[in-house]
Image 1 (cartoon, rainbow, N blue to C red):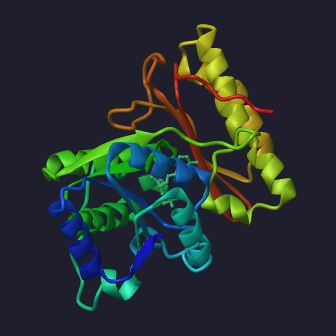
Image 2 (cartoon, rainbow, N blue to C red; image 1 turned 90 degrees about the vertical axis):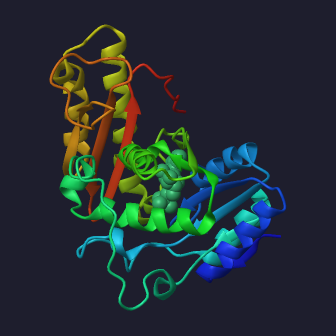
Length: 288
Ligand code: AMP
């Protein structure tokens, strides 16, 4: 049975104790409303270490004032059951007050990587992410941490932070888990009704179109993206960005498309903001 820990200090002590006993720890930070994408991170984590710990914390500092913090799905009981079934040792689900007690003022920033793409449309988002992830790493201690490539830019930023601050953490980037129609699993998919869900499936379809264009030799990013853009414009209510990006600095490609470049999307269906991405040259998913 998974142990639920709500206090930061208790989480720190528990992880420390386990390491003293000689156990290695793999850590999966999440915001909860766990789905198979998260559980895949847990499965990978368990391959890496003796013990898997999961954090569940809807981090207020990474939400903008007009974003869905209040609405964000919170399903702790169900999450705990899923973690127990998946063989998670500890779930750390702190209160906001214990993570950000009165007087709190420190922020961690990875300024260049954090101001493009997601950062441009969600100012301050990655400062919130980095700050909470660093706090969680400090509490967990030396570990292997598993993140999903669904949040590609987030992974790059955390990788930079770990390197820049000499954190005793090895990172693993897990592939995106998709449903049978190709839609990337997300806690926010719960907001979609049937009609919106069908339109959301245009996102993986657009990514596949781009991959196909690249696979048949189209190296001009704008030409490779053209058909996909039409699909997205027909289905999305608003597109924040859709383009081809350099995986090192997350800036838009100025020259030719290349294997390893990232095709990334962010946009809205109604009030629901969805993101997805694909790495050119990687094995593609199939839809049924
Ligand atoms: P979240 O709870 O949305 O903050 O996500 C927690 C972790 O799960 C992050 O590292 C995400 O990138 C990862 N994740 C979310 N959805 C997926 C998915 N469909 N496939 C793989 N990883 C995912």
